[in-house]
Length: 203
Image (cartoon, rainbow, N blue to C red; front, side, top):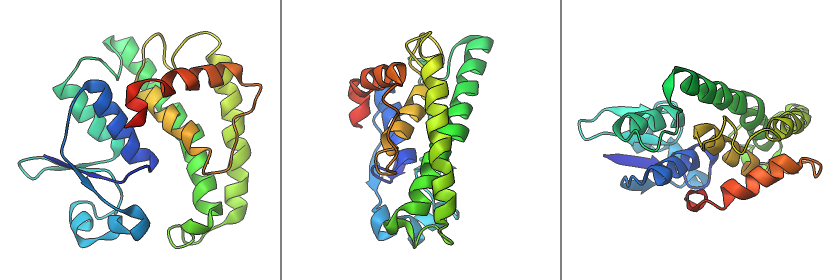
């Protein structure tokens, strides 16, 4: 088994945090995305979409997409349960995971990819207007999330989950995207401080 890893990019980081929370070690093959390593023949042969991370199993099976990789390891190592427990618990985690992906992470990524000069060869065409449009989208969702976190410690309930992992990488990625969490989002900032203190956040 081998995990093709893309460093500090949000999706590879999601998988590393997840594996750390599980206490699972997987051999990593570092891919330098800044040098376009994700477009190399080695990665392309495994994932024609040229995106990371990529998990290759011992039998040659390839799994791409960060959440799909995390689900695979959840099946192998069900404790701690990071996708929720029971029908309702799993559905609530899935709901929040999707909300974070669609309303926060995607907006932050769009702002970064369409505004950062280093992304001009990655995002073709790079549309600065679209990048600017996504900044307030991210801020609006931060305020929505702040109101929700007034009622609980974690994104999807009383337990840390994949939704917290996705939200953590999204909020952290706001910095290179030059988006600041609104200072009045005290609950969101409290949550971020707590999850950032977990050892897995350094993965």
